[in-house]
Image (tube, rainbow, N blue to C red; front, side, top):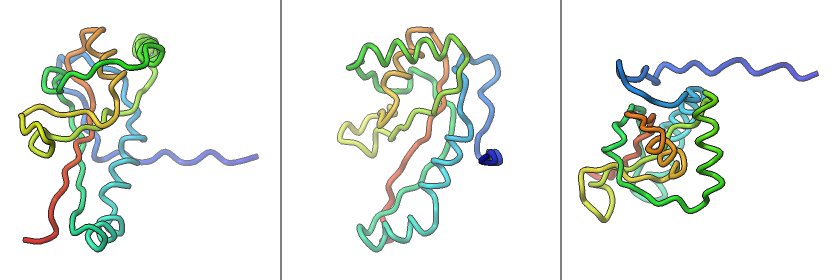
Length: 140
């Protein structure tokens, strides 16, 4: 019989803002993703390969601060809606700031989480958990 893995500590995951309406967050998944992105060895490999490196941080974003994206798989939207209503923890959305995209606006742009984002809009949630990714040049 396999022993269960111990839970991953989640020191980088702050609680949602007071009075916000949001969905249940899978904090261990968010912390694991942050650890993978910000891993010093991964950063070093990226600098050697591309001259760039990626940094990420966790926050709670107002849904109005995210650029709208259309649903492209209605069944996935339905699953996200059901999970939110059942209180099942979901992964954080993966976003990039507008200044790091071709749009150059002040909105956050989705890399992953279109259906969770639209489910949050549908359920009139005020905030969603996000992992914000930023690319930086290794040259100064």
